[in-house]
Length: 302
Image 1 (cartoon, rainbow, N blue to C red):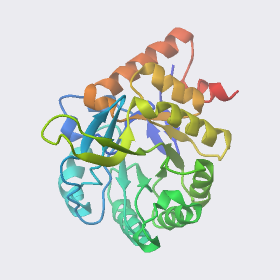
Image 2 (image 1 turned 180 degrees about the horizontal axis):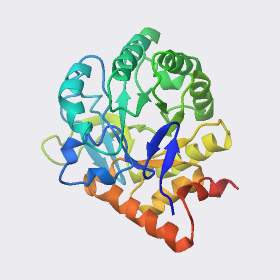
Image 3 (image 1 turned 180 degrees about the vertical axis):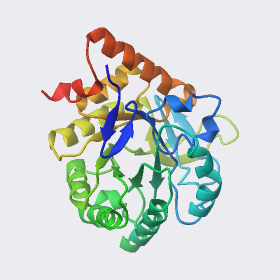
Image 4 (image 1 turned 135 degrees about the vertical axis):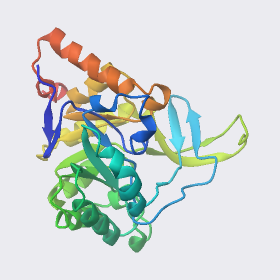
């Protein structure tokens, strides 16, 4: 049995990683998680300048989900390289740095800077960000704009590119195709869904929160979109995510067409969930006499 995969040029000893945004810069989970067991580590999205994020309340638990409006809080690229990368470089998993921006120039600048840094296996391009030059539309909501940002990043770096897709669109395949045409090596989906809720308890009771919904509530939507993109046969591997809480959820994503999976909200309830899924996946494959996860990818499409 071989759990190793090569996804778009990024080598991983297994196909399990954290979703960007929930895992900080890995050190936050050091001691809670055996970090070197993971296939890769995806950082929280980095921007050119530091961002404070949104004021409280910025989290709200809902029925089978979690709404967040943290808004890309991060220390900026300079502090990231000086204070976060040294620890990341000590780890064995492939390091994938997620980047975000308000303009294409910001994405390009980040890609160029990170391309000169040792120890980075790939870049995740978070296109669920407002394009301030186009009236605030998300980069990932328009195929033309998605193509422009991915193609601009592509010529700015030799690192593998992962494009993280927003589900807040009417046709996710058209966005995925534009990213592939722009030069992405991997597609990652889905990001959070637009949502709103009223906080009922605690110090912020009565406040409304508008943000992105994650957790098991979005799994059926995520599976549908992963399958749609996989069936489009765009020629690049898929990282599936959205509501993975256990081994069975992970298997569903592999069967829907994902080559690898990312786990997010579940880590808040159980920091060891990724390790448990890796171990469970190993036992499942052995029990079924399957040599590697590649043999189950897309099983539901056949």
